[in-house]
Image (cartoon, rainbow, N blue to C red; front, side, top):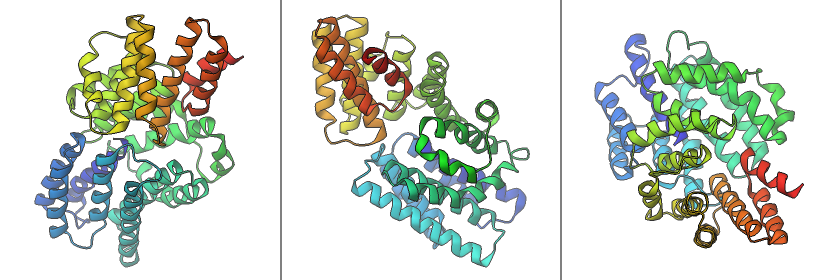
Length: 374
């Protein structure tokens, strides 16, 4: 869901246009449609979103907003998007169209704020998806294209509180991401230094004071506190809010359960886990099986049934290659390793921890696996 922030920033852009009177997206009907689209995407109502996209295209033909909305709808329907999939190709095609249309606008007016915005958004998301596809040099190139536009938003944060969100994200991830992914360290010289502490404060300010970015700020704070700051209790606070506000969103449901387990909270999770188990997408079935296994292992101490759920999670997730799928795969392997150790099958436990380490995306799994292997 974290890329829905682009649609929310678009909503901000619409509202700013009334004060500046400089944007072409200043039709109250378009503003209404965009706000409605946000809610549909948060609730994963993809069909409703597609209908709204068609209406917006009728009102604003040949505008970069159209391929951007198409990209976000594909994202909502297929999140997390598999690297080698038709959906990923569709996403990149829509984003390239966004950049092309935005750059055509810049040729007419180099100071156009909306053209600058869509250039930043298009290149920024292309950088994200090229990274997820393993195209690291292309990802760096796209990030450089987005950077100059991003800096403009930093200068606007004191006038528009919504921009504290994008500024905070930059300050935090500019420093944290190269720490976690050293492959990018040689390329960071191009980008202005950040500040992790300041970045977190700015994202929190966005959550507390912004109108449009509150949910996105809560989502990122959940992710940061859970996977980077090792503070699952803080993560759970934000994850619970999102789960309660958007109970039908499986992504927020999975984040809530993940944070609950990391905070050692095992009660009243059955209904949420079942929501994932009956989902029609293998990714959510996979995560549901993992969580069911953790519940059986950690709360009920039923290692036989827990093992069965971990194995089924790996089976249903066979072939899934997204970073999110790898995350749950690593959790399943650590669960199986703990069960093997409990049965005194130490060689098997080591082999399973090695598999967990190979799939691990975040420090919590890496730390457990390395501690056992060392």
